[in-house]
Image (tube, rainbow, N blue to C red; front, side, top):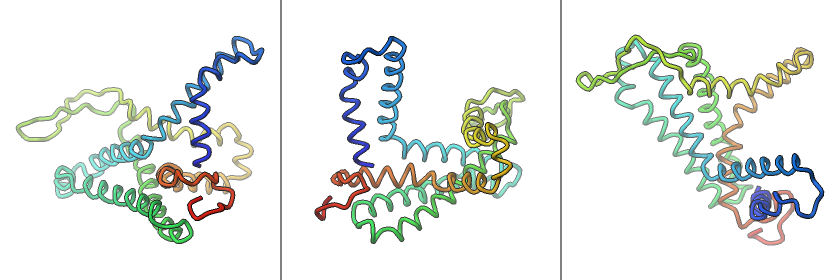
Amino acid sequence: MNGAFFGTKKVIANFVNMVSCKRTNHGCCSKCMMVVFMIYTTSLFALQFFIVGAMFAAIYAFFDQIFAIAFDGNYRLEQAYESGVFQLVFAYVYIFLIVMVLILSLALPLEKAKAWFNIVLAAFGVLTATSIFGIVFYLVNEGFFPPEKKYDPDTKEWNPTGEAYFSPLVLAGVIMLSIYLIPMIMRPVDFLGNMGGYTVGLFSYILLIPMFINVFSIYSFSNLHDISWGNRPTTSGTG
């Protein structure tokens, strides 16, 4: 929300005062934790300006790997993959949805744009869910030590060298998926008793990730003039 954005900005602007704790009797440990908290808050604040592009880059990278594995051995699909058709289509569709969110956020009031936002969210949800399941498929097939490949400029192909290497990309995927499973692991009794709720919540969260990252971020930055915090009626047409 815009109010939270400007509130965080004000807190970061008072970074020195927050860390020094001159007006309190906090101990050294508390002050050190305040430094860690402020660094964390500042990092998240800076990430807001790159989160939309970072999500696109991450999904694009995984789609590229998934296509390479899925089409391995199928000559026609492999040729299409090497020509960049699938990557190009995905990139155009994703960027079109981003531009659509930007135009809706700038041009239409929220009441008139809701139906269009629902369409965009449905398309984003399909892309995100596909990428999540594709990541699982990639991890199962490649493991932590995928085969190393070397590019041959003569044949313009990536050929396996017979060796394997540790993949940070695989590790990142495992960590990301583990975040979804930790609540279930930490509360097994509650999970078994409410398995339906956990499952619905998990899939709902995965489908709505683009809403939190893409739609909310773009809409908020496109309407910085609205200082109502989003939970109070505005007194004028501009907020």
